[in-house]
Image (spheres, rainbow, N blue to C red):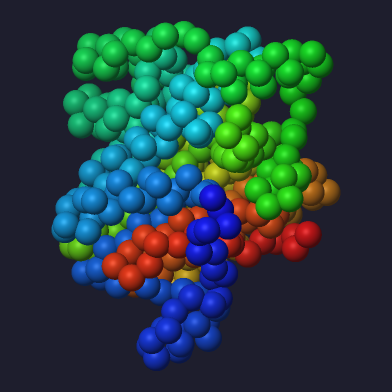
Length: 343
Ligand code: SD4
Protein backbone atom coordinates (compact mmCIF):
# COMPACT_ATOMS: atom_id res chain seq x y z
CA UNK A 1 0.00 0.00 0.00
CA UNK A 2 2.65 2.40 1.13
CA UNK A 3 4.87 1.62 -1.86
CA UNK A 4 2.20 2.95 -4.21
CA UNK A 5 1.98 6.21 -2.34
CA UNK A 6 4.02 9.14 -3.35
CA UNK A 7 6.56 9.66 -0.61
CA UNK A 8 8.46 12.92 -0.58
CA UNK A 9 10.94 14.80 1.53
CA UNK A 10 10.14 18.24 2.80
CA UNK A 11 13.07 19.77 0.97
CA UNK A 12 12.26 18.51 -2.49
CA UNK A 13 8.65 19.58 -2.82
CA UNK A 14 7.63 22.16 -5.33
CA UNK A 15 8.26 23.12 -8.91
CA UNK A 16 7.23 26.71 -9.51
CA UNK A 17 9.87 29.44 -9.47
CA UNK A 18 8.35 31.09 -6.45
CA UNK A 19 8.57 27.81 -4.63
CA UNK A 20 12.20 27.37 -5.60
CA UNK A 21 13.07 30.56 -3.78
CA UNK A 22 11.23 29.33 -0.72
CA UNK A 23 12.96 25.95 -0.99
CA UNK A 24 16.19 27.76 -0.30
CA UNK A 25 14.82 28.30 3.19
CA UNK A 26 14.51 24.54 3.51
CA UNK A 27 10.74 24.67 3.77
CA UNK A 28 7.85 23.79 1.56
CA UNK A 29 5.05 26.19 0.77
CA UNK A 30 2.02 25.01 -1.09
CA UNK A 31 -0.93 26.55 0.61
CA UNK A 32 -1.28 30.30 0.53
CA UNK A 33 -3.96 32.45 2.07
CA UNK A 34 -7.12 31.90 0.13
CA UNK A 35 -5.95 28.45 -0.90
CA UNK A 36 -6.95 25.76 1.54
CA UNK A 37 -4.72 23.02 2.85
CA UNK A 38 -4.79 20.26 5.43
CA UNK A 39 -2.02 18.28 7.07
CA UNK A 40 -2.35 15.35 9.44
CA UNK A 41 -0.07 12.97 11.28
CA UNK A 42 1.15 9.58 10.10
CA UNK A 43 0.08 7.50 7.11
CA UNK A 44 -3.57 7.29 8.15
CA UNK A 45 -3.64 11.03 7.51
CA UNK A 46 -3.94 10.38 3.76
CA UNK A 47 -7.42 8.89 4.13
CA UNK A 48 -8.43 11.42 6.76
CA UNK A 49 -7.30 14.29 4.51
CA UNK A 50 -9.55 13.03 1.73
CA UNK A 51 -12.60 13.55 3.94
CA UNK A 52 -11.29 16.93 5.09
CA UNK A 53 -10.73 17.95 1.48
CA UNK A 54 -14.34 17.15 0.59
CA UNK A 55 -15.12 20.19 2.74
CA UNK A 56 -12.07 22.41 2.21
CA UNK A 57 -12.02 21.91 -1.56
CA UNK A 58 -15.55 23.29 -1.76
CA UNK A 59 -14.72 26.37 0.26
CA UNK A 60 -16.02 24.90 3.54
CA UNK A 61 -14.91 25.77 7.05
CA UNK A 62 -11.68 24.36 8.46
CA UNK A 63 -13.50 23.35 11.66
CA UNK A 64 -15.86 21.04 9.75
CA UNK A 65 -12.93 19.65 7.78
CA UNK A 66 -10.81 18.72 10.79
CA UNK A 67 -13.75 17.09 12.55
CA UNK A 68 -14.91 15.02 9.56
CA UNK A 69 -11.33 14.21 8.60
CA UNK A 70 -10.28 12.50 11.82
CA UNK A 71 -13.66 10.77 12.14
CA UNK A 72 -12.54 8.58 9.24
CA UNK A 73 -9.59 7.42 11.32
CA UNK A 74 -11.67 6.99 14.46
CA UNK A 75 -14.05 4.72 12.54
CA UNK A 76 -11.39 2.71 10.75
CA UNK A 77 -10.92 -0.90 11.77
CA UNK A 78 -7.45 -0.72 10.24
CA UNK A 79 -6.26 1.89 12.64
CA UNK A 80 -5.39 2.13 16.27
CA UNK A 81 -7.22 5.40 16.79
CA UNK A 82 -10.70 4.93 18.25
CA UNK A 83 -12.45 1.89 19.68
CA UNK A 84 -10.40 -0.59 17.64
CA UNK A 85 -7.29 0.45 19.55
CA UNK A 86 -5.24 -1.27 22.21
CA UNK A 87 -6.74 -1.11 25.70
CA UNK A 88 -5.27 0.15 28.96
CA UNK A 89 -3.60 -2.38 31.21
CA UNK A 90 -6.95 -3.31 32.77
CA UNK A 91 -8.34 -4.16 29.33
CA UNK A 92 -10.45 -1.05 28.62
CA UNK A 93 -10.12 1.20 25.57
CA UNK A 94 -10.17 4.83 26.73
CA UNK A 95 -10.17 7.71 24.28
CA UNK A 96 -9.00 11.34 24.33
CA UNK A 97 -9.72 14.10 21.81
CA UNK A 98 -9.81 17.84 21.36
CA UNK A 99 -10.78 20.41 18.75
CA UNK A 100 -10.12 24.13 18.35
CA UNK A 101 -11.40 26.72 15.89
CA UNK A 102 -10.45 30.09 14.43
CA UNK A 103 -12.12 31.99 17.28
CA UNK A 104 -10.08 30.10 19.91
CA UNK A 105 -13.17 28.15 20.88
CA UNK A 106 -12.10 24.74 22.09
CA UNK A 107 -13.53 21.50 23.42
CA UNK A 108 -12.09 18.26 24.70
CA UNK A 109 -12.93 14.87 26.13
CA UNK A 110 -10.61 12.55 27.99
CA UNK A 111 -10.78 9.05 29.45
CA UNK A 112 -13.93 8.49 27.40
CA UNK A 113 -15.14 4.90 26.99
CA UNK A 114 -17.43 3.14 24.50
CA UNK A 115 -18.07 6.14 22.27
CA UNK A 116 -17.03 5.82 18.63
CA UNK A 117 -16.35 9.46 17.79
CA UNK A 118 -14.69 11.33 20.66
CA UNK A 119 -13.83 14.21 18.33
CA UNK A 120 -17.52 14.84 17.65
CA UNK A 121 -18.20 14.80 21.39
CA UNK A 122 -15.33 17.27 21.89
CA UNK A 123 -16.97 19.57 19.36
CA UNK A 124 -20.27 19.34 21.25
CA UNK A 125 -18.46 20.21 24.48
CA UNK A 126 -17.08 23.25 22.69
CA UNK A 127 -20.38 24.31 21.18
CA UNK A 128 -22.95 23.26 23.74
CA UNK A 129 -21.37 23.68 27.16
CA UNK A 130 -19.69 26.52 29.03
CA UNK A 131 -16.70 24.19 29.57
CA UNK A 132 -13.63 23.13 27.64
CA UNK A 133 -13.09 19.59 28.88
CA UNK A 134 -15.22 16.70 30.15
CA UNK A 135 -13.68 13.45 31.33
CA UNK A 136 -14.55 9.84 32.12
CA UNK A 137 -18.09 8.95 33.07
CA UNK A 138 -19.14 12.61 32.88
CA UNK A 139 -17.95 12.82 29.28
CA UNK A 140 -19.76 9.58 28.46
CA UNK A 141 -22.94 10.81 30.17
CA UNK A 142 -22.80 14.00 28.09
CA UNK A 143 -22.20 12.01 24.89
CA UNK A 144 -25.23 9.79 25.57
CA UNK A 145 -27.38 12.82 26.35
CA UNK A 146 -26.29 14.24 23.00
CA UNK A 147 -27.47 11.09 21.24
CA UNK A 148 -24.16 9.32 20.64
CA UNK A 149 -24.70 5.54 20.88
CA UNK A 150 -23.01 3.47 23.58
CA UNK A 151 -20.83 0.93 21.78
CA UNK A 152 -20.03 -2.59 22.97
CA UNK A 153 -17.28 -2.91 25.55
CA UNK A 154 -15.39 -5.42 23.43
CA UNK A 155 -11.89 -5.30 21.97
CA UNK A 156 -11.15 -5.51 18.26
CA UNK A 157 -9.51 -8.81 17.20
CA UNK A 158 -6.13 -7.06 16.78
CA UNK A 159 -6.38 -5.42 20.18
CA UNK A 160 -7.52 -8.66 21.78
CA UNK A 161 -4.42 -10.45 20.45
CA UNK A 162 -2.10 -7.62 21.44
CA UNK A 163 -3.57 -7.48 24.94
CA UNK A 164 -3.29 -11.23 25.41
CA UNK A 165 0.35 -11.01 24.33
CA UNK A 166 0.98 -8.04 26.64
CA UNK A 167 -0.59 -9.84 29.62
CA UNK A 168 2.10 -12.52 29.43
CA UNK A 169 4.59 -10.05 30.88
CA UNK A 170 2.31 -7.18 31.91
CA UNK A 171 5.19 -4.77 31.51
CA UNK A 172 4.57 -1.12 30.75
CA UNK A 173 7.62 -0.89 28.60
CA UNK A 174 8.08 1.34 25.60
CA UNK A 175 8.13 -0.63 22.36
CA UNK A 176 8.78 0.72 18.88
CA UNK A 177 7.90 3.85 16.98
CA UNK A 178 9.65 3.86 13.64
CA UNK A 179 7.29 3.07 10.82
CA UNK A 180 10.02 2.33 8.34
CA UNK A 181 12.11 -0.22 10.15
CA UNK A 182 9.39 -1.21 12.61
CA UNK A 183 11.70 -0.48 15.47
CA UNK A 184 12.39 2.54 17.53
CA UNK A 185 11.42 4.38 20.61
CA UNK A 186 8.61 5.23 22.97
CA UNK A 187 5.42 3.61 24.20
CA UNK A 188 3.66 4.78 21.07
CA UNK A 189 4.56 1.92 18.85
CA UNK A 190 3.10 1.53 15.42
CA UNK A 191 0.91 -1.48 16.11
CA UNK A 192 1.07 -4.31 13.62
CA UNK A 193 -2.41 -4.98 12.32
CA UNK A 194 -3.78 -8.29 11.09
CA UNK A 195 -3.78 -6.91 7.53
CA UNK A 196 0.00 -6.50 7.79
CA UNK A 197 -0.04 -2.71 7.94
CA UNK A 198 1.40 -0.66 10.78
CA UNK A 199 -0.45 2.10 12.37
CA UNK A 200 -0.48 4.64 15.15
CA UNK A 201 -2.83 5.37 17.95
CA UNK A 202 -3.21 9.09 17.29
CA UNK A 203 -4.19 11.43 14.52
CA UNK A 204 -3.65 15.18 14.73
CA UNK A 205 -4.94 17.36 11.91
CA UNK A 206 -4.59 21.09 11.27
CA UNK A 207 -6.15 22.95 8.37
CA UNK A 208 -6.50 26.35 6.76
CA UNK A 209 -9.64 27.01 4.76
CA UNK A 210 -10.22 29.22 1.73
CA UNK A 211 -10.94 32.16 4.01
CA UNK A 212 -7.51 31.79 5.60
CA UNK A 213 -9.03 30.53 8.86
CA UNK A 214 -7.45 27.76 10.92
CA UNK A 215 -8.80 24.85 12.95
CA UNK A 216 -7.33 21.68 14.38
CA UNK A 217 -8.31 18.33 15.85
CA UNK A 218 -6.51 15.58 17.69
CA UNK A 219 -7.86 12.17 18.69
CA UNK A 220 -6.23 9.14 20.25
CA UNK A 221 -6.50 5.96 22.23
CA UNK A 222 -3.34 7.08 24.00
CA UNK A 223 -0.56 4.75 24.96
CA UNK A 224 -1.37 1.06 24.66
CA UNK A 225 -1.53 -0.72 28.05
CA UNK A 226 -1.30 2.56 29.90
CA UNK A 227 -2.31 2.87 33.56
CA UNK A 228 -6.05 3.14 33.98
CA UNK A 229 -6.99 6.80 34.06
CA UNK A 230 -3.87 7.97 32.22
CA UNK A 231 -4.46 10.95 29.94
CA UNK A 232 -1.83 12.16 27.48
CA UNK A 233 -1.31 15.38 25.56
CA UNK A 234 -3.83 14.76 22.80
CA UNK A 235 -6.95 16.18 24.51
CA UNK A 236 -5.05 19.04 26.14
CA UNK A 237 -5.34 22.37 24.40
CA UNK A 238 -1.83 23.81 24.11
CA UNK A 239 -0.17 20.39 24.33
CA UNK A 240 -1.57 18.05 21.64
CA UNK A 241 -3.16 20.89 19.69
CA UNK A 242 -3.15 24.66 19.47
CA UNK A 243 -4.69 27.10 17.03
CA UNK A 244 -4.21 30.86 16.87
CA UNK A 245 -5.89 32.39 13.88
CA UNK A 246 -3.36 35.25 13.72
CA UNK A 247 -0.48 32.81 13.46
CA UNK A 248 -1.32 29.22 12.52
CA UNK A 249 -1.83 25.85 14.14
CA UNK A 250 0.15 22.93 15.49
CA UNK A 251 -0.53 19.37 16.59
CA UNK A 252 1.66 16.80 18.30
CA UNK A 253 2.14 13.07 18.38
CA UNK A 254 4.33 10.71 20.36
CA UNK A 255 5.00 10.49 24.08
CA UNK A 256 2.33 12.75 25.50
CA UNK A 257 3.97 13.25 28.88
CA UNK A 258 6.89 14.96 27.17
CA UNK A 259 4.64 17.08 24.98
CA UNK A 260 2.72 18.30 28.03
CA UNK A 261 5.85 19.32 29.96
CA UNK A 262 6.78 21.87 27.28
CA UNK A 263 3.20 22.92 26.44
CA UNK A 264 4.27 21.61 23.03
CA UNK A 265 1.80 22.79 20.39
CA UNK A 266 1.32 26.16 22.07
CA UNK A 267 5.08 26.66 22.24
CA UNK A 268 5.45 25.90 18.53
CA UNK A 269 2.71 28.41 17.65
CA UNK A 270 4.35 31.07 19.84
CA UNK A 271 7.65 30.60 17.99
CA UNK A 272 5.83 30.93 14.67
CA UNK A 273 4.33 34.17 16.00
CA UNK A 274 7.89 35.41 16.41
CA UNK A 275 8.53 34.66 12.74
CA UNK A 276 9.91 31.13 12.70
CA UNK A 277 8.71 28.82 9.96
CA UNK A 278 6.63 25.78 11.04
CA UNK A 279 9.57 23.43 10.64
CA UNK A 280 12.01 25.65 12.52
CA UNK A 281 9.53 26.28 15.32
CA UNK A 282 8.84 22.54 15.63
CA UNK A 283 12.57 21.86 15.63
CA UNK A 284 13.20 24.31 18.50
CA UNK A 285 10.62 22.65 20.73
CA UNK A 286 11.89 19.17 19.84
CA UNK A 287 15.38 20.37 20.82
CA UNK A 288 13.96 21.66 24.10
CA UNK A 289 12.47 18.23 24.85
CA UNK A 290 15.77 16.54 23.97
CA UNK A 291 17.62 18.92 26.34
CA UNK A 292 15.18 18.15 29.15
CA UNK A 293 15.20 14.39 28.61
CA UNK A 294 18.99 14.14 28.10
CA UNK A 295 20.00 10.52 27.35
CA UNK A 296 16.37 9.40 27.80
CA UNK A 297 15.53 11.24 24.55
CA UNK A 298 16.95 8.18 22.78
CA UNK A 299 13.98 6.20 24.08
CA UNK A 300 11.09 8.44 23.16
CA UNK A 301 9.48 9.78 20.04
CA UNK A 302 7.71 13.13 19.77
CA UNK A 303 6.80 15.00 16.59
CA UNK A 304 5.17 18.36 15.94
CA UNK A 305 3.31 19.25 12.76
CA UNK A 306 2.40 22.87 12.03
CA UNK A 307 1.04 25.26 9.43
CA UNK A 308 1.19 29.05 9.36
CA UNK A 309 -0.63 32.07 8.00
CA UNK A 310 1.71 32.24 5.02
CA UNK A 311 0.55 28.80 4.00
CA UNK A 312 3.75 27.04 5.01
CA UNK A 313 3.71 23.57 6.53
CA UNK A 314 6.45 21.74 8.36
CA UNK A 315 7.23 19.15 10.98
CA UNK A 316 10.10 17.92 13.11
CA UNK A 317 10.53 14.77 15.20
CA UNK A 318 13.00 13.38 17.72
CA UNK A 319 13.60 10.23 15.66
CA UNK A 320 13.31 9.36 11.98
CA UNK A 321 10.14 7.61 10.85
CA UNK A 322 7.57 10.34 11.36
CA UNK A 323 5.63 11.32 8.27
CA UNK A 324 2.63 13.50 7.69
CA UNK A 325 -0.03 13.66 5.01
CA UNK A 326 -0.53 16.87 3.04
CA UNK A 327 -3.49 17.77 0.88
CA UNK A 328 -3.99 21.02 -0.96
CA UNK A 329 -5.10 22.15 -4.40
CA UNK A 330 -2.01 20.62 -6.01
CA UNK A 331 -0.75 17.85 -3.80
CA UNK A 332 -1.90 14.72 -2.01
CA UNK A 333 1.26 13.25 -0.55
CA UNK A 334 3.05 11.85 2.45
CA UNK A 335 5.92 14.03 3.62
CA UNK A 336 8.77 12.53 5.60
CA UNK A 337 9.78 14.84 8.42
CA UNK A 338 13.33 15.59 9.48
CA UNK A 339 14.43 14.55 12.93
CA UNK A 340 16.86 15.40 15.72
CA UNK A 341 18.51 11.98 15.62
CA UNK A 342 19.26 10.77 12.15
CA UNK A 343 19.36 7.08 12.92
C1 SD4 B 1 -0.54 10.20 23.89
N1 SD4 B 1 0.33 11.58 22.13
O1 SD4 B 1 -1.56 9.73 24.37
C2 SD4 B 1 -0.46 10.42 22.38
C3 SD4 B 1 0.05 9.18 21.72
C4 SD4 B 1 0.47 9.30 20.29
O2 SD4 B 1 1.06 8.20 18.31
O3 SD4 B 1 0.64 10.35 19.74
N2 SD4 B 1 0.69 8.18 19.61
O4 SD4 B 1 0.43 10.48 24.58
